[in-house]
Image 1 (cartoon, rainbow over the protein chains, first blue to last red):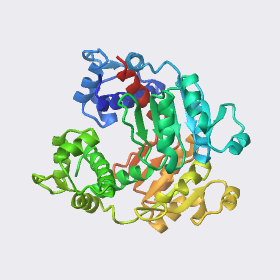
Image 2 (image 1 turned 90 degrees about the vertical axis):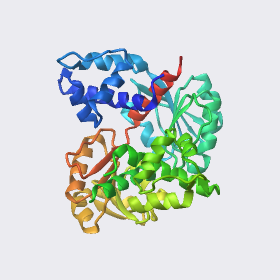
Image 3 (image 1 turned 120 degrees about the vertical axis):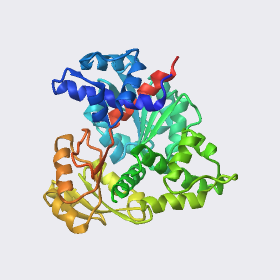
Length: 207
Length: 207
């Protein structure tokens, strides 16, 4: 098991390697990777060791090869099925994002408790009433869910998703959703919490 | 200067202390705080030391007092002015969030490049055309901005905000915005990136 902070850094590294590859860079040292990610070179080498690579050569890491290793380790090249719950403005805006309509992630189902609203949304994605979340998630073997419902129903929605066998949840509802099951992962996209971190960084930088 | 990972943890701690206080808990040990945050007790004590507290007593930390210390250190009790750029579905959904209309954060301005759209939005928040971003941010001394525009204009919007003197940016555009200025802070709310981290955690947990 790779510890969570290392997974987080490896995902940031993967994103950086994609950018570097697009700009035509072929090799990079752990020192330069560290600088770009704001992490020590030693940490970068330790993280990369989890992929089974012992050390970089004198000329640094081969970007394409390293990207491939991360992708294989975490199966990024397999398309993941996702769904979205809550088809208000936030939910429909996310549903139409091009980076979530196939490739690495594919939103294949949308849910809303308001059946009249379902009828007004024109989408290529299959839409279902919220009471069928558990059944549809199970039947279509959906792995990931994005929650975009009001705060008061977010925990209930999460519980229904988990009953259906969901493995990961991205929560945009303005409430911290908690899970007891340690095999299901959640990321709370906490807008006021993120603004608070920015405020703290700003205050901390003024001396 | 407190290092960024410690700031991040102290903000998570602040949130936890708010929750604990609401549930009526009065004291807690660093060990229990660590468990709840998924961090070692030693780290918690080190982070709290940045606040000028040397150690907890045998009965643990006083929750109200500790919350107050974090709040004072980072000035969480001062209302921060914020603005939102991009008033499509995502932007207007965020604009109406109750946690962002006063108190800790207050969205006091909205911007969109489409002047016709500005006229159709009924909001208690003052709305402005995008060309006036720099001027309005400077005049109203807005500290924080939320970007909810299409990917292709996000960097340009960030540059205009920075020209106006913005200090922190939360970016929802599906592109990583980069800043050269080290005194301005950005958090990219990278949806596919977050789904990728969840996928990696899921894969990592299957043995």
